[in-house]
Amino acid sequence: MGGFLLLIVLVLLLIATIFILLLWLLTKNKIYGKVVLFVWAGLFSLYFGMYFLGWLYAKKVLDKEDFYGQYTVDRNYFPGKQADWQYNHYRFEIKENDSIYFHVTDGQKILETFKGKISTLAPYKSARLVINMDGTSHHILTTNPTIYREPWDFFMVFNSPKFNNMYFRKGKWKEID
Image 1: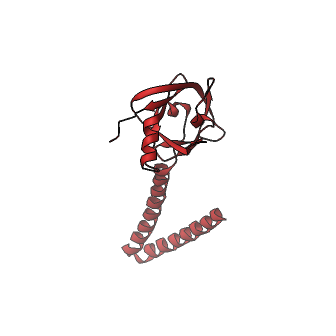
Image 2: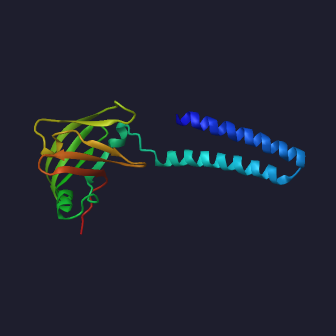
C-alpha cells in the first residue's frame, strides 16, 4: 500500500514538474525554474539524508569475531551496590581460539575460573553466541545469553537463577571508587 501511494505521489510530482517547466518555457520567468530545482533538490536531499540516517542508526550485524574480548558487568542499567558487587565479582573473556574463561573474582584477584568453548549460530543476519562449558559451570552460564545490538555496539544479558538478568558489555575491568 505504501509503495503504491509513493508511486502516485511521484507521478503527480512529475506531472506538476512538466507543467511548471512548460510555464517556464512559455513565460521565460526564472522563478518557475527555481521552483522545480528547489523541489527536486529537496527531494534528493531528503532521500539521501534518510538513507544516511538509516545507515547511521542501523543495528550492528555481529560475526563470531565480534564476540572476542573481555566482558564486565555493565553497571549503567541498574546502578548501585548490587551492580558494583557483581562488577567486582564476575567477568569473562572470549579468546580467538573460541574458548571462554568465566572468572569469579574479588576485585582484581581471580578466585575461580570456569572454562568452556563458544560457537555461533546465525539463524538470522546476525550471529548468536552459544556457550558450552567444560564439566561444571557457574549459575550465570546456565543459559546462552540474549544479545542486544545497538548501532555501534552490543551487550549480552545472562539469565542467572540467583541474580535474574545480568548485563555484560565488552570492556576491561577497572577498579571502581
